[in-house]
Image 1 (cartoon, rainbow, N blue to C red):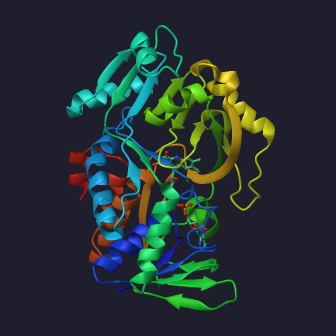
Image 2 (image 1 turned 90 degrees about the vertical axis):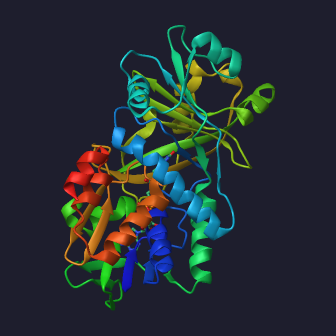
Image 3 (image 1 turned 120 degrees about the vertical axis):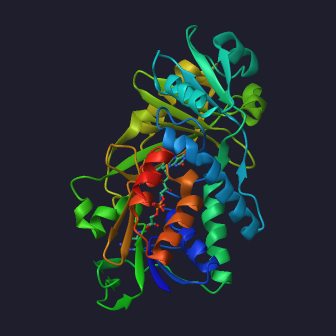
Length: 374
Ligand SMILES: Cc1cc2nc3c(=O)[nH]c(=O)nc-3n(C[C@H](O)[C@H](O)[C@H](O)COP(=O)(O)OP(=O)(O)OC[C@H]3O[C@@H](n4cnc5c(N)ncnc54)[C@H](O)[C@@H]3O)c2cc1C
């Protein structure tokens, strides 16, 4: 089966990988290089975590997400992730961290609760309010995102999969499984998969008005020398504050110490140049200051603006239109599910099966609901 894939981020490349493994003929198109540094899937690292607030469906999916990564590591001959553990800090009763704990209890998942003095003892680089507490999992950590998409592209190319960089798809006939390019030429397959990330509404107008491209800024910082080791050995962090969520990825295996989250999330066109101002970088660092010991000693190294598509529901969308399957609304959360989503989408495309179960699963429905929909 010939499947045209629009978009070479983690979803498109993983779908191509799973289709090729199953003996199909994926053909991948990206408007930029493959991999594309402007894609949401391209950064030093992304977090993989069990904590999912009250979204039990996604917390439950983590087991399968890890299994999919293991299959990918075996195929690539390299493991592109590190288990650093994940620590979520609760600052307000009933917040997302509190909800995550309740979900762990429901699922019987292992965790450790740390009070504020224990957080300070274990992680001397952190500073949390007296009433705060931490929810620590030994599992979870980081995925080396740019190494994964680069490794996937190389693997696909070595397998003879057609990768077409610098090839923007400007039109889609979903029923006919035909895509049109800027020069007016066309390609037709047995099916199309659209995995266009933040650009989805430009290609699929039905997403315009519901899904928005969100510009998100992350800042890489150098910690003070006396905390370098604590950071390098420490967990990935999630801090729920009254102003939104902050997340922080530790400097492991050659990656930098990354700060991201709430202060700088706003609608932004992915085709607008991605310049980050010094003031924005300072704003990110300032939002962490209450939680970092010696915050004034951190130095900003580099900042990146990245775009993802979201409709505010924090739930993935998988839709079939004619012979086309569209994966959308990946938000700030899809990377960890990338390999798994690729496997699921590939099998739905190849089977041509009813995708209501897949759609419910992708939306994070509890397992029983997803099965009932299937
Ligand atoms: C700052 C930031 C932090 C994040 N942190 C995390 C995290 O810690 N953990 C996590 O799990 N997730 C995280 N995410 C989310 C995750 O990175 C994304 O959900 C995921 O990478 C989306 O993958 P994708 O393949 O759908 O889209 P993308 O990676 O954006 O890929 C889409 C591709 O489609 C191409 N394209 C678009 N339109 C066309 C067209 N018309 N023709 C040809 N090509 C086209 C684009 O060029 C692009 O290469 C984060 C995202 C951001 C932005």
